Amino acid sequence: MRPLEPPQEIKDLAETGEVEVKTTQPQEVAFTVHKGSQADLQDSFLKLMRWAAENGYELMGPGLAIFHNDLIMVTSEDDLITELQFPVHKK
Image (tube, rainbow, N blue to C red; front, top):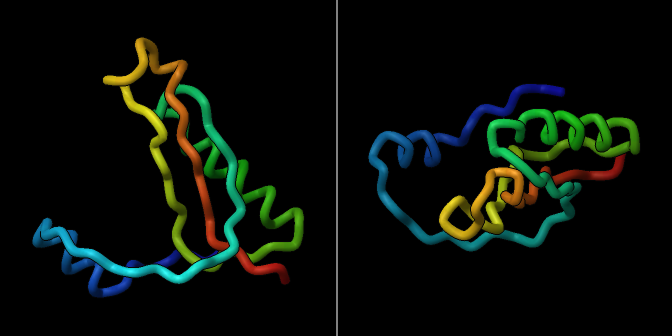
């Protein structure tokens, strides 16, 4: 796997902290759902990356985390639900 360099427009927004709107294209993604502390997300991302490689997929961009709830909505970190995605292409 090759490290992905953020596009310049993303680097620029990271510096300014501005908010913008963009339209994204539909894409195929490999995904998993992580339940529990967000501190353990890296292990689930690595599991997802391994699964993609073992099943003939190439990662086509940076990973994405979708937080379906947060600590305001649940009483315990054990109940946090985070969907993890990578855009993929079948080799």
